[in-house]
Every structure is written in C-alpha cells, then in structure tokens.
Length: 121
Image (cartoon, rainbow, N blue to C red):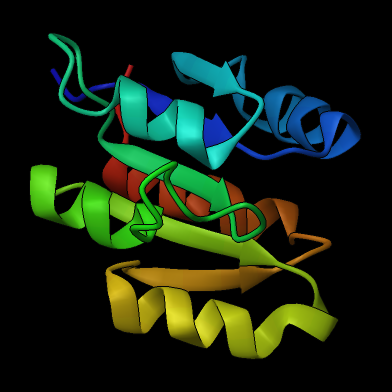
C-alpha cells in the first residue's frame, strides 16, 4: 500500500483547498510548514507524494528542505508549489530536489491526476 499524501504549506486556505480536493479519495497528512514536512519524512508511514509550498524552505541549519527530503527519501514524489511571482524559486526547488512544480492556484484535475498516479488509499 502506498503512503499518504503530505500537504505542507504555510497558507491555511490553500491547505484547506487541497484537503477538499483530496480527502475523499486519499489519506492525508497536513502540516503548516515545509519544516514540519521534513520531520514527517522518514517516519514509519512515510508519504508517497508531497505537495509542498516553496516558502520557508530552509531548515534551522540553513539547508534547503527540498534537498534534505531528497537525501532522506530519494523515491518520494516531491512537488514544489508556488505562485507566478515565485516561479524562479520553484525552478530552484527542482534543482535542489523537487520532482516538479505547480503554480498556484492549482488545477483540480491536475492535482487529482498526480494523486491517482502516485498516491494510494
């Protein structure tokens, strides 16, 4: 069985929107920041898909969270989420370890398609 989807974003309304899209079909772990997501990765029931905002993407030690997650769990699908003004940050997140990125606001069918391919219930 594949792991849950981990949603990590500082925007409460955005987290709630993703929860409404995904909660009926997939197990979710929802946290308020990318730093909290890093703490989840590596636990007994690791996520199979991470949807993570690109804001606040550094650890307390200054390491990039995308790179830290990739180092811990190289097989997790890790999607960086940003708005149009942060497109360069999203590209940098991919360079550091994100599998890909999506621009907010997200397309519901695209989110469901990624979840169907990479997460399980």
